[in-house]
Amino acid sequence: MTRREGIVLGLETTCDETSAALLDGGEVRSLVIHSQDVHRLYGGVVPELAAREHLARVDAVVDAALDDADLDVSDVEAVAVAAGPGLIGALLVGVVWAKSFAFARGVPTVAVHHMEAHLFAPLLDHPDLAPPFVALLVSGGHTLLLHVEDWGRYVLLGETRDDAAGEAFDKVAKLLGFPYPGGPEIERAAGIGDPTGRRLPRPLLRGGTAEDDPDYFDFSFSGLKTATALWVDELRAQGSLEGARADVAAAFQDAAIETLVGKTERAVEATGVGLVSLGGGVSVNKALRARMRERLEGKAGVVHASPRYSLDNGAMIARAGAFRLMVDGPSPLSTAARADLPFPGLRPRRSAA
Ligand code: KG4
Ligand code: ZN
Image 1 (spheres, rainbow, N blue to C red):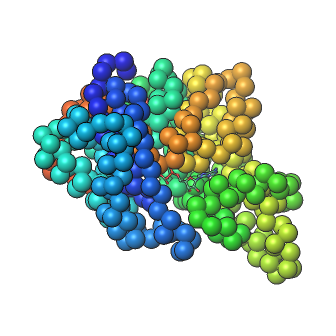
Image 2 (image 1 turned 120 degrees about the vertical axis):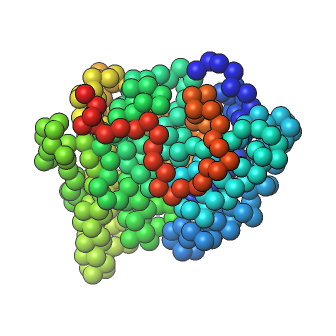
């Protein structure tokens, strides 16, 4: 993807980050991320508050991104916006803003799928990243294992049956009394804890040993969360929770990572590709990255974006938007925000042959 793609403004408002970035021919000129602190009070994202905060911040965030890039609104050649999946009120702010801007300035707008943007994020750090590869996309709302045959051509190998990986980290953090978002808190606590205190379940890892078994590539995190919750209840009843929090975090993280790595290893073996790309907020977890590398040593290389491009951000939206603009052209002004936007170019495994 070396063709000049012009200056693209990327806008992200799917959840609790208001973010804008300017991408110039594939290079990030600026990235501004406003993380909404208001949700900390509630231990999770409150959709209505998220929408209001996006509305209050979006202009300032875009202005700051333009300033940082030393660009003017008239330099923007296209606007890419995350149109879903996500919280509908939050999405609406970004989509309506982007369409209004595009209409007023006479530039194209392009609707981007938030998870396809996570897939494109590593390209910001590694411009030579090229399919085929296996992608593990792990965020607060999704857990997807893909065979990326080409940019825009994806086979869905596995997904979660219930909670997303990040959601499990957030819920366990809440059980342990850590603030939202829980992923970084669990990682920090796990770093000083003993993971061997209790062996928590590794869901869907032992059964389903054949590729055509429906459990083979799928994930499930709600059983692991429940097992952790029961342990936390026991510890609380014994009055020993405080001193055991790091050990619980370590045992939980170990089980979650084991599942993510085990399924990814299966995907590498089944597809025969020699590269794995990690994306989404959970992919900043250093223990996950390290364990993935260790396990795939000699089988596949592992790439991921730097943390600022892995967590929700406007640069990944601009990057995926530049691609979509190139292959599909601009989105019509009738484009709507969709909480359940389908992943473009994704087809199920059964029809892959
Ligand atoms: O991709 P992302 O920024 O937003 C969504 O699209 O959801 O991912 C956020 C998720 C949250 O669940 C958060 O707890 C998790 O990523 N996360 C982590 C870490 N940092 C963020 N999970 C595990 N370890 C981390 N260090
Ligand atoms: Zn995300």
